[in-house]
Length: 305
Image (cartoon, rainbow, N blue to C red; front, top):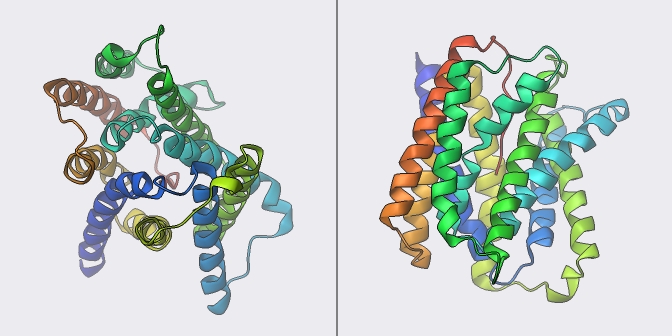
């Protein structure tokens, strides 16, 4: 019972921590280019976790598994987190969180197409359609093909992040169950961070790299709290609570991100945002409920933003 109580506290921490990372990313982008910011964040977090595990006697994953972990790093950190930070350059942080909350739609679709995956049932399809309608209602009026398309580019980047996350999650579900999750996750972070450094170099971001006290504090928060703290809390909750329960953090994150975006950055909180968010959450609930009823027991994919 004590473990379960701590697990619920860990789950609550995940809800809060990963709901605040969108605002922290927005602050970092004030002086730190997006790809280099992610590169520094994930290499630092992965490196610190590996050092801590080594001090406790855990060995890193064998080199034979590095290729697969590099692929996961590209999909889940490179595309998943990279798409989010790119989107937040032109899309408000709260709106980005709401768009990224459609990741379960992508995950259901990818899983249906994967070998041995769960089929796309009628109820899931209805949920996907409802969620898609919500997103169209949310972003449609702000998209203009005759003027500035930066907002549209941010929306597309957020959806690329969802697609990368879904592909990576499907890959993780088919990996050996006896892996040490923290060590493989840490190496995944390192590889993902290296991909981000490569992207930042291609984009000539080193010339624009700068730190202010405000952005340095936000970056440190992302490393210690967002990556290491959120990741560890998620794993603890996952070990002691049903997967369906833990996954409900995806419903909480957008709400907190919208509130913080309105409070810290004076991002608009309109009736359209509220209504579209409600429609998206209805679609997510339908998809998630059906998925929970049919999902087999097993280790869930680890999500970290």
